[in-house]
Image (cartoon, rainbow over all chains, first blue to last red; front, side, top):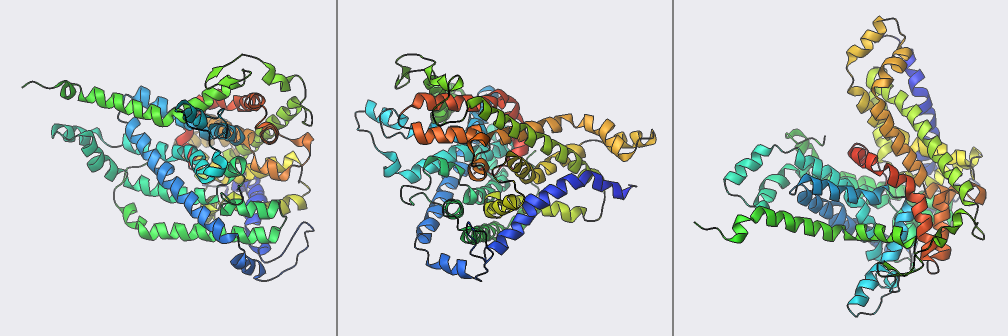
Length: 295
Length: 281
């Protein structure tokens, strides 16, 4: 095509802004992690000082454990587990019902995060005004203070109800793309719903399962918005995950250098998991096999 | 051979059972949204039955809550952020997506790879550096800072999505325009852009909603009450009224979530194209 110079008319606005607010911060984060910058914004390079501090920070083991529990429990129970269950069930019922349920599951993701937070604060309210305690009261059980009894459960469930929708959409699209001939053949052979699901549906959406697992691990590792709203890491670090700890260090304690160092480690953890998934599931092999496309 | 009742109706029973299971696992969503709306109009509730209906919870609309900024000023700020993010994103992605889809320029492939790498980079891990950049540009405690930041962080992925819409339009349309004497820019504006209207609409609505719902950046980079948006307003009411006044809390929440509810059915249709771009877990 002629007029190669003209391409920059189209690209300049995007490139300028993305460089200022995205590319520069990426580089800057790496540089800042070697300084002990605080609210005075002085550039004092301290070499690996921050990373040494992280190694001896007494909160870090707790935070690391929380992050792993939070990420993998939410992933297994909701982002993959519940998502798969919803898409299997809703594709096996009349589509009017199926899309009704799937639409409802989209609602949490589209609700502003603070409003969504209110809903879960109500569900886990320590008095009988809250949903869980109201149900317990109907069965004659005393109300529980969930924030102190089970804060981790609160944030896992609250995040899970949002996280399930992405897997649900991708699995549903994949299941709907499976040619109906397979199902007809199986029905003639007298296969039950469970047999069809296990022998036809699941093997054919394997690629999507792996993709969602890998992708959602990375998003869960870095997500902290809903935790900030619902428990703010408390009580006493019991729900403090790595991303939230980074945020608190930088913006509650104004230890910007330390926060940047924590971010760098988070990114490294993310890269390690991405690499592990690539190796473990042999993505390359899967890519070469014929697969069902998402759309 | 006689079939038992179960054997004759196996399919129907299974479907009925599945619908029941779905109702059970969806119930927290159904119940909590139902509660939210009902609670905002009632004095108190016993379980799910309002003891008495009222509009007093909505008093924040006509009289100011002590220590809080005016709700309409706050709403205006929120709308300003949402609309500006939308305009910036539509402007940048409709041009950028066209360039990536149609021009073969040096560095095209590396640019597309770069976009994917940036996307993998969680924006939350950049907050410290972004704070520094905003401070350097004098955009801290300034809504323009939030708008530019938000638009820039979402643009790379949205450009990919727009590129997909452009890819779906046949080259012949463009040749026809060029043969008729349009310049490349005119072809884009007069021939191609009208054809990707659905793509532009999807990008616009999602950008609007993400600007409207923004919380973390507002919470971190905005300090003055006069620049609060509704997310900060609702967060503050959670802090102050959580145990005292669920009525006010739910009314403010419903008010804030209104645009989402209105645009919901449009949005949920297009969700699959864009969810992969979300940063939320």
